[in-house]
Image (cartoon, one colour):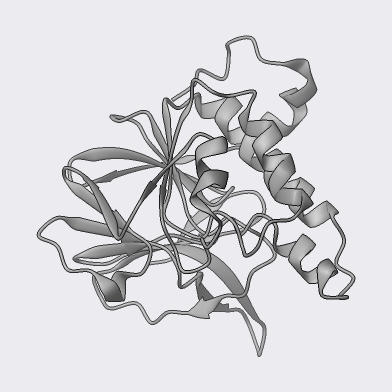
Length: 233
């Protein structure tokens, strides 16, 4: 992981203070869980995320629904900050990098990508990844169908479509958990879910819905707030 003490671009110095990854050893590997809804796999120098849905706000606006562009800008900026912080050699996205058809926001992502051509970007195709293959090629994105493996892990978009002897990471479900406080107070948080045979990553994009999960007794669940990761189970 990047050394926080090293020199960084002053433009991002203040925001770096809010990146506080949590160390988590799993299956003999070193994972850093970030409140920015991603994982840095230290041994592979790989940043792992799922379901950014870049372009979704633009898709809504094209349909006449006025959604501020600031949502997309914030997600793309967070993505850039994470790359600056962790300095990965590879980025792996387990599906739904883009939300739907081509729009201006996708062009902006490609412009960003042109500044990081030395960074390998791998996409395991999700159900929303419907763009022409030429778009992914132009953006320097390697597209993988169904699943991609680096021992001891296997990565896919939808856990329901895959069985594997390796431990599976997936996205698609946008998992969340409900926590309760005194009285009738309750809060729903996006989460990282680690079960016996598979993990489910939170949606990286903020403009997404969430699906409630029901953890089993020995599962690990990490709730995500704006500033930290909380081990809930």
